[in-house]
Length: 187
Image 1 (cartoon, rainbow, N blue to C red):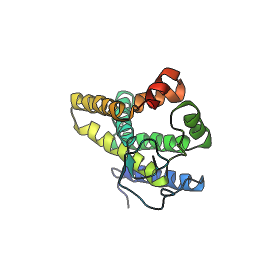
Image 2: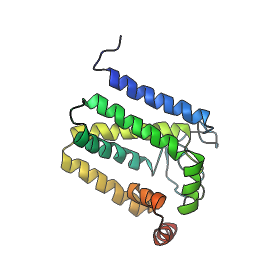
Image 3: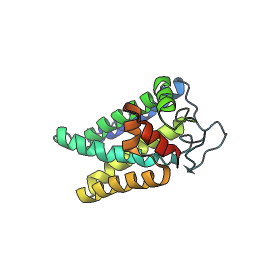
């Protein structure tokens, strides 16, 4: 029997499993079409991007955890940590499903420099969801200043190295700017 305290954690795990099965049913590849799995793939302009366990976009999912923790602390403070984690996991899983829909994949390819983006492999999506969970846990234990420093640090790091990050990714998806696309392509 699952205890009442453990229930939201089991639900979080179940959400990740259901999202993975959904993505498989939707036709997402389980692993990279290249036939192997790497722990890290650091080449931004590559058809293998978002196909392996982690890549330059993994930090943005870690940051989702920090941001979801902060947001849920503000609006659902009375819920236990476990239930807030379950809500955050559900939001992240929905994002992974939406992000890997044909409409969003085509949107990324049309308005960003991600011309070789064909969606995430299922292993990458699961890793992204687990990165969010890690960020959520870190946000719980770290002082606010450290959480803010990590968010800013990862955004600056990815801006510097790949000319992209969570903020630019959202901007370009919702309100693409030619100047930003040209700057990203120059890197």
